[in-house]
Every structure is written in structure tokens, then in C-alpha cells.
Length: 153
Image (cartoon, rainbow, N blue to C red; front, top):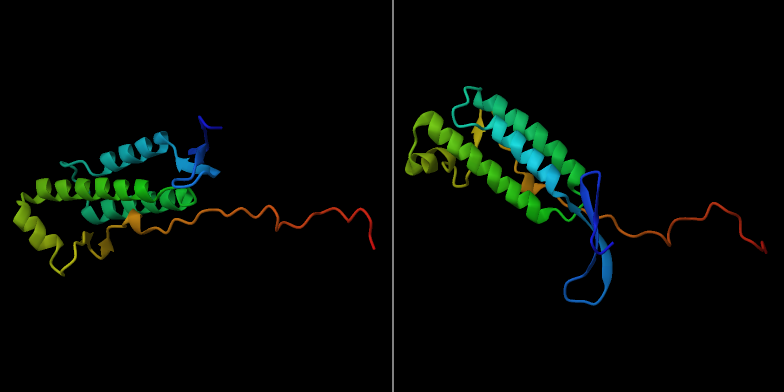
């Protein structure tokens, strides 16, 4: 278990909790699903793509929402942040190539309201780093036993 194993896209590993001497089983996101998601993002956000930008944002949102909802029970906050940065930069480079913008024009168009926002035709870019990661909690002692007690009193 200390080497870990991959199962259904998760990397399950037994590790020592940082700062303590206690050991726990952690579920991380394996490398292969991250590579596959990045390949899908690259295919959608090619610089010379002629697809409608709103449909690109819609499809990206669908893919990333489904992916995040599947992996939100793992130790995934750092991975979500990295994927969000990757996708954001792919979209910015796509817009720069499509419109011929320099960086001041990018800032003018994407940070007009004071915060950076990528949107087209009412469709806004889905920030995967905003997905709440919730870990499964151990509840082995709280599960009721299906068997009757040995000596009923």
C-alpha cells in the first residue's frame, strides 16, 4: 500500500500525514486522467480554431464540471488549481490569436469589471478551482450491524 495503486482514475496510497506520525489512506487523482483532460482541453482550444467561442466555453464547462464532480472526493485542490490555470491560459492565447490582441487589450477586454472574466454570449468560463473538495470520512464504527446481538437481554 505504501507504493500505492491506480483504481478507476484514482491513485490510492498509504501515507503519513504531514506533521504527525499517523498513517492514513489517501486517494489522489492519477496522472492518466489529468493527461486525458489536458488533451481534450488542447483539442478544444487550438489557437487557429474557427469554432464559435461560446460553444467552446459551453463544451469546456461540460467536460470540466463532469470531471470535477467525479474527482472531488480525492485530494484534488492543487490539481484543480493547476488545471484551472492551464485552461485559462489556453483560452487567453486562443483569444489573442483570434483577435490579434496584445496584453493591454486582453486586460481591457477580460478585466473590464475589475475581476478577470472570460465570457461570450452569456456563457462564462467555468472555474474548476471553485469546486468544493469534500473528503469521505471514516464511518466504520457508526454503521449498524445487520446481525442480531449474540445474547439478547
